[in-house]
Length: 551
Image 1 (tube, rainbow, N blue to C red):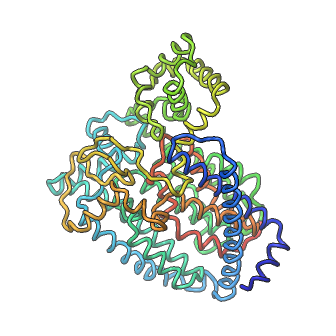
Image 2: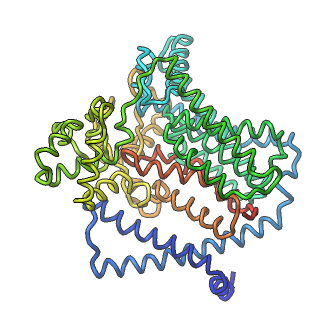
Image 3: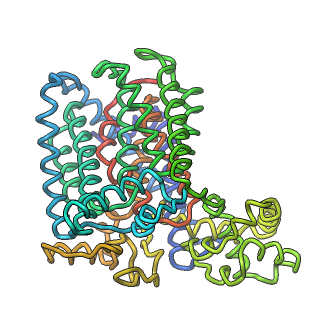
């Protein structure tokens, strides 16, 4: 596109300029503040030179955003003019195409699974299996995932006489699910007329990019959660583009109830994302298209009800102890702990008495800026259940007196999500079953008890170990951005702003992802596993970019 043409677009489209400025300003703020938090652990007042750099970066990022939006618009228009239509190929031709994509991705992941046999049995895997074995369930971990893990691991052990075989079976099931979802995304790209080179790049990304493979072969609940969240997004994509006719409407809306409910059953915080999404859909989605928004609203209400019924039923049948409120109080706990460590004299004797009722001093001393678990684990849930008001009153009062400390405490547990230069090493010093985290905690890597790694391809195993617990790929310029969770968040945000610019209904397809991300900002730390849907969902972004359904 010629320079004069680009200039004309900016001059005649104030919405484009405003959105570009928003994106550029936010990214500049993220880079400047994230860099300070990474180096110092707290924000500092900006200097004159710092303000100049901030403005310069904001201008550069805004210009790049604007150019990217214009480029996407031109490519989208060209793709729309050149493709025969997303439903042109008969449905019976979809199965061979799907199997083609699935076989390639599955084969690539399976090779790594052999190298990491029995797979990555990590991230609370031992705890979940212990609860299944002893029938002492709690709602801290998703009960459905604990049941599926226990049945597959112990069932495989019974069948094959080896617990590693059971772990392998559990991870294989999860790998089959996520690789199928990734293949469905590629099939939809093909049906939408996305160019061959783009599809090849995304296929290579899905088949070989280490973070994708790591979590495809991981026992964590994040893998099935991501699968069902992305399936929900794909259904919303079809609904927002009026393509419900491709399947029976009754089946479509049934799936639109089931998939979001499944995502909630594998991650409790997804419930809050969908709960907020529903009124936004009800208020702002246009009552247009094939059947209007009523069936969507009904399906999502049914999804929320289905989640509540199943989760409550599982809790009742398994006699699971209800998790204490400390998970929902992660940010307040971390903020009070930071203030206590930074300025203990700011608390009166009466305030300390209240604080110690909920968090003992022995736990407050374990404060770590980027990880709330060491303090949070000592939180007195019984006292909170009895009367939480004194704790909340103390938290609010100290926050009014020390807002900067509170801000630093909160940002230190979340900046890895939005600062592309963050090194993921929140577990530094933690001893796990087979090693101690030192330079990086990008990925868990290990096989927790009772499993044991028996690599069949040691060279690949060494590579994944290096990627997981060393930081070399996080320190290579440009390459590090490919591994940074924040890079994918900014890519998703770019497409989100593009849809706003075009007033495209697909805003409602991508909105659940951002609502889920907002729940993470109130979480205990920043880890790749929490945002792996951004990696898995990369192939959805071209679909959103070429849609054209006006609000």
